Image 1 (cartoon, protein in one colour):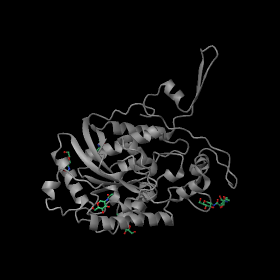
Image 2 (cartoon, rainbow, N blue to C red):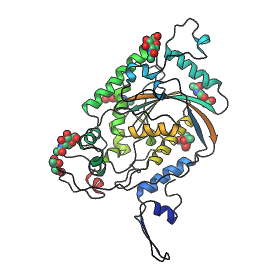
Image 3 (spheres, rainbow, N blue to C red):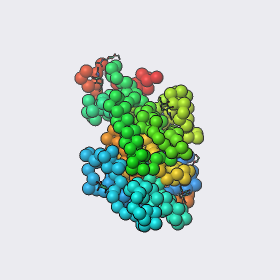
Image 4 (cartoon, helix red, strand yellow):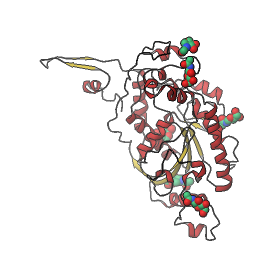
Length: 380
Ligand SMILES: *[C@@H]1O[C@H](CO)[C@@H](O)[C@H](O)[C@H]1NC(C)=O
Ligand SMILES: *[C@@H]1O[C@H](CO)[C@@H](O)[C@H](O)[C@H]1NC(C)=O
Ligand SMILES: *[C@@H]1O[C@H](CO)[C@@H](O)[C@H](O)[C@H]1NC(C)=O
Ligand SMILES: *[C@@H]1O[C@H](CO)[C@@H](O)[C@H](O)[C@H]1NC(C)=O
Ligand SMILES: *[C@@H]1O[C@H](CO)[C@@H](O)[C@H](O)[C@H]1NC(C)=O
Ligand SMILES: *[C@@H]1O[C@H](CO)[C@@H](O)[C@H](O)[C@H]1NC(C)=O
């Protein structure tokens, strides 16, 4: 994927300045050296593409309100609507629930498990519970200064002297949002009989670890399905430049979260974050598809919780062909997904390289002159 084919022309498409002489004979290429993140992103990508299988995905429409174009994401409240599960019948109702005593979720769970068991070779089904973290300090700052100044200035700093947003913590509102989802799950498990997640994946950033904990800790979970989160590097937010998206070392995460498991091969240092280069949208979509491939290839469970980020969830939607459904901070949505296994590595196609976003001059009130790389220099 990134910098796999290091031809001159691909460098020209990326970061560098290409000047063709008037005679067209001389090509002078000035380019910034391939950064660590590009190399590491390429390494991650090529490790992924060595996978023996990948999957084609089909979102199953007609089961959840969120996949219906008519549902307005800005006003839809999943906590008041059974997480979006639609009232309907399933082919398996007659045999499973002849006396009509089961809840909608019980009938849905039976139906999904039946589909998965009776599927033809290579076909499997999962229900993803996608959760966005509660509000973090970076969300507050972006809302305060506006997206433009956030992107070109503040996002590069660890904070503004009053608040810190590097690897953001949750704000008090963010904690309340996650606790509201905990309350939702309490009644969902007890009354609606919503199937508890069977696996809990979480991004390695502090705000998602906190959100998953506030959301799922202390619930009456089935004994065989305890809350045991697994950190997945691929679940994190867009890589690079923004200090809020830089993770702690494995050692530090482990000291803060001793009960959380790391996926195999999780690196000590954050190899994917670079102060100057930001992951492209296309790369993020592809990265999330590799994450979903990993889950389908390696996890036989069906009801899967993923605690992640706005950009990554939107990339999952895009990659899977689900309509764009923007989650509020602390929001959650299900996706019912059919997959057909294919052999060989995922054909990644052409993916846009990371870009070097412009830095603007210090906005009024800022007392720090931002230069490229400063974010690294000032963060510890
Ligand atoms: C689904 O059915 C239940 C019980 O019949 C009802 O209370 C609820 O309002 C219905 N929901 C929708 C979205 O139609
Ligand atoms: C720092 O950021 C927070 C959150 O956006 C804001 O409330 C506060 O006023 C800022 N402080 C300074 C000194 O800019
Ligand atoms: C200016 O920078 C200092 C230290 O970096 C910080 O303590 C202070 O709050 C900043 N003030 C503003 C207005 O950003
Ligand atoms: C969640 O947080 C609680 C309270 O801090 C802690 O006791 C528990 O171990 C955490 N759970 C996990 C799985 O990290
Ligand atoms: C399944 O997990 C193994 C071991 O972590 C990994 O090498 C492989 O790439 C995963 N499969 C997919 C399709 O991601
Ligand atoms: C779902 O189907 C896949 C593919 O046949 C299988 O590997 C997996 O064990 C099934 N999961 C369950 C819970 O039945």
